[in-house]
Image (cartoon, rainbow, N blue to C red; front, side, top):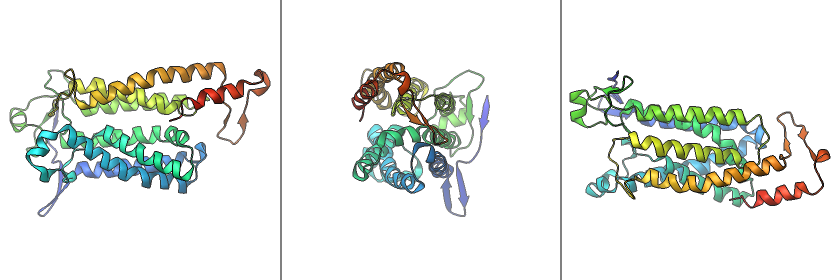
Length: 298
């Protein structure tokens, strides 16, 4: 077992700063840094990336808090004053993704910027940021797992941790659910980095992210014990959101894969050269690819 006795707050006199909040801010900054590093590869300027992030962060934070409040409606209806107390924790990954995507889509449409290319770019920064954010969950003791007898269980001993007080007092070992997510995200990140060596249709890396992220969240939620409210067929809100995303994304990903097999896209390589197979492809396939790709634009 692994014992965690760290205070989840930095205490300065009477002021308590949650370490979770520091990890969230660090995760956002890490995502921005990586996005700026990848900007040229995807054909964006640093100014455009900064503008995208200025659009995404407010929408993501509002969406993350809103979906969390909806998911834990009973808690917040009993004490509505807790709704704006975001510094105590309580953000939904899906709310962040949905809220961020909504504001980014509006901004991209307004500025006539390529949305699919930007979504492909942010897959790596997003997974890196989500992984770092989950470290904050480990420190705080939120998003905790069900009791376990497995040797890698976490035992929280600090009274300020977010676990039930009796679990802390009785030293109950639990599944390290946030750690499961970190490992899942890092595995998905490795797959996406490996796919960068291939010429893929625009939007396909983001579809891989959607499928991998949703599958991971759906499975790992079965190991979560923090208060969840069944919404449908015994599934909680996260799983209810993940399921239709998987149903929609998997067939679309397979369709993209077939398009790639029929005619690899013409992409600009990192060195600025254009890799093209027009000479070896029958005339008209380029138009066919474009037609097929347009069907999948969102």
